[in-house]
Amino acid sequence: MAQKPSIPKGTRDFSPVEMSKRNYIFDTIKSVFTLHGFHQIETPAMENLSTLMGKYGDEGDKLLFKILNSGDFLSNVNDEQLAERNSTKLMRSIAEKGLRYDLTVPFARFVVQHQNEIKFPFKRFQIQPVWRADRPQRGRYREFYQCDADVIGTDSLLNEVDLLQIIDEVFCRFGINIAIKLNNRKVLSGIAETIGEPDKIVDITVAIDKIDKIGIDNVNAELLDKGISQKAVEQLQPVLTLSGSNEDKLNSLATLLANSEVGMKGIEELRFVMNKTNEIGVKATIDLDPSLARGLNYYTGTIIEVKALDVEIGSITGGGRYDNLTGVFGLDNVSGVGISFGADRIYDVLNQLDLYPEATRTTTKVLFVNFGEAEATASLKHIKKLRASGISAEIFPESSKMRKQMGYANDNGIPFVAIIGETELANGTIMLKDMNLGTQQPLTIDEVIEKLK
Image (tube, rainbow, N blue to C red; front, side, top):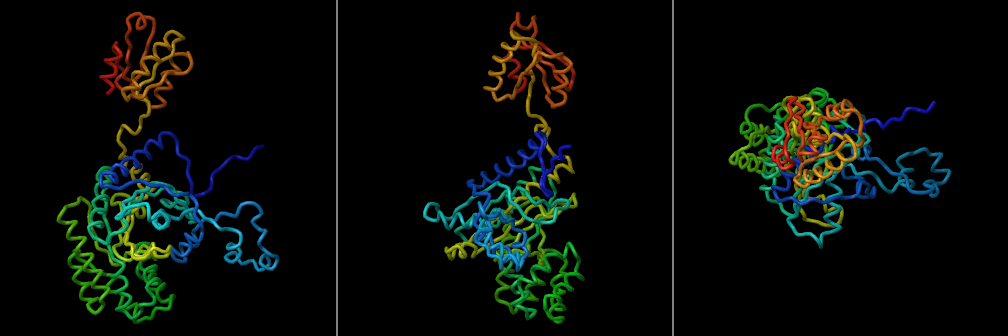
């Protein structure tokens, strides 16, 4: 008996109906990106591991999918290396490429590689899948799409303001209520400096970024396990428990970080971004969250994370500023900032809240019934005119029983059925049936086009 086929955990198939919904997501995000002056690029699914490794921290490196070298990938491995059973060392010899973990690092590589061909500031967007060897769970997949927008070649904070407007516009169009959480990496550096642990900035940010998931007590325990002193952990508590309005939080941070130049710079940047965004006006809730770190080593300034308010799910958009990312590829002093929409999580949110427009549920607008050769020929001529007018139409491929053809229309959610029988052939008309109302009327092809448009 043949084994039942399956797909890897953390991946999904999508039916035509599901793809219609997903395309609605992609098209909506793409239209907003374009409205704000961003231009589309694409990069390969696989990158050299030298491009990817070391850009996401130790935890991120572990989640990279490695691709075995072509041919005999063990040809450069000796028996001693095999006997040692050190997978990390062995991987360097048998895998030189990996699937991209995100779109930002490949974008930085793209900028460096094509720096003489592009004009700065460069505004790009990219909608492509990424892969992470993570443990699959609700809202977390091993293969998923990201929809990124980045501006590189300018350090103006107006870019952050523009990206927050993009986020607000996209989710307004989707009808999803959101909270945009903001922080600044300089504030985190100032915190580490103030509590006397500047060298532990990565350990601190990785730990406190989990506060929503594991709670403050477990965060404190992790900090102690990382070698951070009890005194430093105690000094950190006022930061982790800040409350009040955004202005109250900024003022409290300014008091706590008064002796940290870098921390005060971060507060200044946060204040600018939040004030400008408030002046322009957005519908989303803006929330200053000093525990927000996102755990990625390349952020150097603003950090952004978006949460859906009406559904329990992880972040559905994130991003931030990365002033030195291209430096690791040989291009120094190029500042960048970007955001990434998690299309798969947005898809789940829209499904749970049933927020898809009715149009996304339909592909074909009108189905022509097939009664035979003469009727089919007339139908094909009409279909050509409908399609030329931008109306999706098809004919049932076989001259089957009426019940079967009408069932096909119902099963596929086709709202109109066009019937051409002997009478219609003689009159040059079409009997158009509205499948939702159950009514029908004879119309000319021009009248059908006018009605369906």
